[in-house]
Image 1 (cartoon, rainbow, N blue to C red):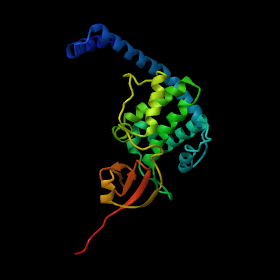
Image 2: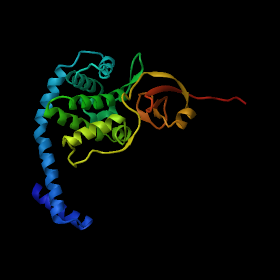
Image 3: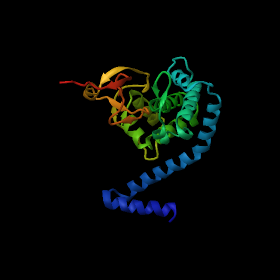
Image 4: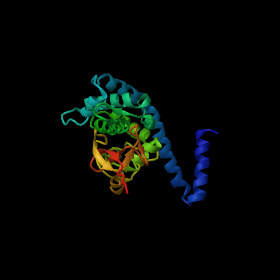
Length: 247
């Protein structure tokens, strides 16, 4: 079945399910197909821009790359370059959709790599949108879309997102830089960037649970119960310890 026939079949199905008019649904599918086509056409430009930026990144340790993303005087080009370089160092093939495979801590500062990688995605998008290039906006969009393709990344960093997510998606919506289905995922807002920080201090498990903190396992990954507790409202990460009572 060719694409035109496939869309026609889906239109008929949705008319039956939703009761919408054929004209309305056909218009939606035309818009959707145009967005997919535009995305395919932009891939070459996105790939070329990414290679160019990665070549301009500073040759730094991951911790230094991460720190450079939050220096006020960092230019959009250098920030985007360093964020992409950090993503390449922390995530397989530099692909945000593979975020769940990122594990470990940067030593000796004990900064969780999974949270640093999430920072890299967001800050890359931020800097790219500040660049004066159509391809940079498309690359920012691709990064966030691929990040949402990771179920856990979507759950922890998009459905519950930092303040910056609203700014990024509003900016892209105003510029008509949209995902194929035409709208950026919305969710709850809690905390702000950076996600990552060195592990400092101690907290009891009960206190962490009462405060609604997110536990991290020994690999720095968000889990239901772990060795560390991340307070995303303040950005602080604590060692978790147990209190034992002898009677």
